[in-house]
Amino acid sequence: MSTAISTSLRTLFPILIFICLGWTDSRLSATQADLPEDHQRGLAQITEGRVKGTVAFLASDELAGRGTPSREFNIAAAFVAARFQGAGLKGGGKDGSFYQETMMREVQTPASGVVYQTTAGIDLPHFGLLAATDAFDYSGPTTLVDPEQDLSQLKLDGVATVLWKSEAKGNRAISQVARLANSLKAAGAKALVLYTAEESELVQLGIAARERSRIESPRSQISLPVLLGKGDPAAGEVRLTVPGLIVTELPMRNVIGVLEGSDPQLKQEAILFTAHLDHLGARPGTGEDSIYNGADDDASGCTAVLTLADAFAAMPTRPKRSVIFMTFWGEEQGLLGSRQFAAEPTWPLEKITANVNIEMIGRPEAGANEKIWMTGWQASDLGGLMNVESAKIGVEIFEHPRFSAMLYRASDNWSLVEKGVIAHSFSAGSLHADYHQPDDEWERLNIPHMTRVIQGLFIGSQGICNGLVTPKAAK
Image (cartoon, rainbow, N blue to C red; front, side):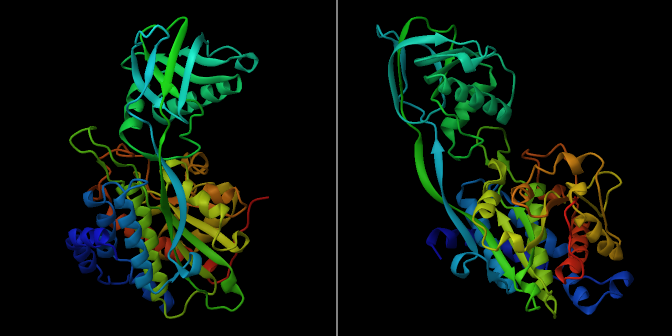
């Protein structure tokens, strides 16, 4: 163990003690007492104390929002791996490791070194870079471009300038700039100057890009250097010098544990439980509370995966099919960790019977306490099959009238759906006001509800795990 990780764990020791103290068995209800002994032994691991202790740790301020990448995310991943190992699982990565590791580029837009002036040496005002690519140096004319025109017929050479009028926010604004940059690059532009007002969203996004590094992803890539111009577009010839992106190579980790099935044939097949471990991290300067703890999104889902691993591992007789437990990195930046697994699976995708991806189970909607809804309900019969089993302990799995269809492509399950796997997200909450806000704290979670939801997922998946039923995709 490195000195840094050792020090971090000592800092977090009081929280770990709290988790351990919460691991007490709860009394089974009369309905649960009618279940097979294996199921009862598993359910006995799914207690409110254990759930509260785990989610309180993952969503603590000490883990600083588990940003991708961050030292705190690495600590969270080490915690998940230790929990898998403690449950008796085997590592599901290369050579028995609990990690599936890939090298990614961490990039940051340079904060200085920009030269923007007339060729006569007169400085032109600007708000700094929004995006950079390779180092760029140009002297020559600029071309004012109307972004509403048909850009496919445009021919450029040099710097394009655009008056930016869009009021789009956040990722939507970045996506609009990326599309514009791609079109201008295809037309021959070498760089783009977007003229905007000081109150524009792009100015704030540019500040963020220069102050914080990020993992490079298709969603965040802009194909041209982009400078934010101030005032009126410069006419005539200009000199534009832009330094290149600041790039660091970093390892990113999915965490994978495997409980091997007990049947010689069926153990080659697996049911996969997943959740994303990352959230938005800390954003200094955004207010008194700058930590985006991500308790519901998705420390709650990771808590479910860890608790389910304990429950399945505690059964005296292992399920016939193998059971895989995994947490992903980089969901918030474009499903990056799940796309990595889908591209380089550590278990044959054709042998994954179903993926139960768990997202935001901590804060139920009105009237939906102890109920679970599944995305993409019409795409397979997985939800119906699991509901037959979960109903035995009074937990319903249902089709949400609004979110089931709308959010099918919104989480890590979609990376596997694209590869032909039956994969759905299971949620037991709503897009509440604290979604992607610093107020998504563990104290706001409904722990009894979460506990019942995890119990429902455990019992609901037993028929599939034991080969009694096999989900099928809709025709």
